[in-house]
Length: 193
Ligand SMILES: Cc1cc2nc3c(=O)[nH]c(=O)nc-3n(C[C@H](O)[C@H](O)[C@H](O)COP(=O)(O)O)c2cc1C
Image (spheres, rainbow, N blue to C red):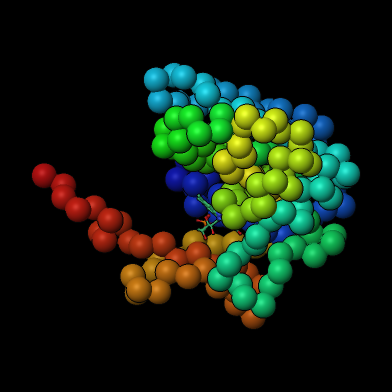
């Protein structure tokens, strides 16, 4: 697939084919992709906590806050939930800004890699840190920075060209398609000498 098409297809996914689960080894393959991603000073300060068993997934799920703009939707129902999680972890209170940037790069690497295998994903910054740390035995000296929820994708998502910069909220149409407005290129490029 052309890289631009891959990036276009890699829209946040919040509804999954829960009954299918993830192919064996998916999560470790995704971390292998993140392992090779760039990071500041090549410090490789991030660590990854994985959940793939039904019990671990059940323990992580209640910690997550889904789609703040969908006020009347509490997240995926039973049967549509993620079947794997990768939690990006950093040392508590250390290298905070750089870890945040590195975590973003690792997360996007994971999202793009997942999409190549029909695996949908959602990066979550809004989650209960204690619940996630407890569920995945993350020690007190470390803190979860981002959760990436993963599963075989069911939700149909499309990127639209935004017509109004003041109206960038994602929305669902009457067929349940999730629309994500993205600003046009000419708005983004400040200068091009
Ligand atoms: C740093 C970051 C934090 C996010 N946190 C959440 C979150 O807590 N819950 C959620 O449902 N989506 C979360 N998202 C997904 C965004 O809502 C999503 O990326 C945005 O709506 C744009 O859609 P797109 O990913 O399809 O381009 C987050 C995304 C990023 C990059």
